[in-house]
View 1 (cartoon, rainbow, N blue to C red):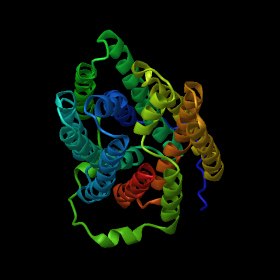
View 2: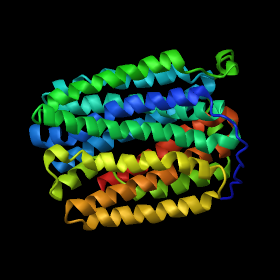
View 3: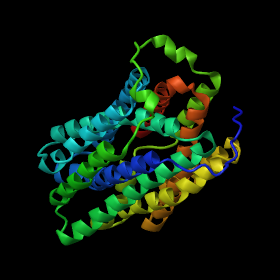
View 4: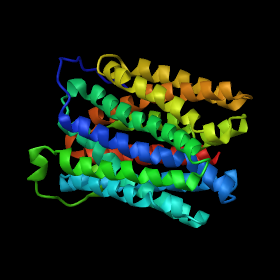
Length: 360
């Protein structure tokens, strides 16, 4: 795979990128607050097994991946991204009150399913919109910034979970109610601040054709294949929570593992995105693979909380080095009129790989 890096020329990032980043921040704050406590709710309160946690997470993530394929294609054919963003984030916001009200695993599974469907609807159109509004010479920085703000939310969510668990004496269900507030803020940001390019708003929708997928170039499929291999070496982040508990972290402090992972992720994403605009993708991917191997080894061999935290930090470094880079590579290798479709295919393949990795 040969991808020629762009040299930055000082292009400014559009305000829409900041709006998308802030929307991601607040939704991730909400979602990660839930995710930091949901495995504990399922195992400790509702009596689920670790296997059941894996099945629920796998089904949820696979649902999101499949939905991304169709939502990306729809956004290309409709030439509109924002309505799908609002729908996807709106569905996620609607599920947040279900988690504290759930009295059985069935409710949890249903809410996770709808939440991930919402993620699937918004994912590919959002990533395509980033490329639509951003000059090519700072595309890596744009993806890095959005991912960095997303990861800041992923830090704030578990941190808020810890603080509220201390304040409310470990009442998981009461803490989960707080997740509703940032989710609603996300929808307001999208409605008020996100703008699409004018040509999208005034373009007539066209019919969906399966032959569109054949227009994706070999370079794109190389990017997808490499991303799938990387994803097979990972697993659902729910297992980071359970691993921390296994190695002796007190229940109230278990979300700290997600805080550390996402702090490293947030701190590294924007600089790594800038490097992706200037450096060869090969070197950054190689560095990301090395750090991922270190993370897996530390988590597999850890016998105390400190090794688990070190593994989580390496996990965050790997994500910072690779996730924004893969988004940039997808945007660079896909035709402009099929960006949503390309991101849908990319997310479907990596979602299936994540399902396989979590099942194992």
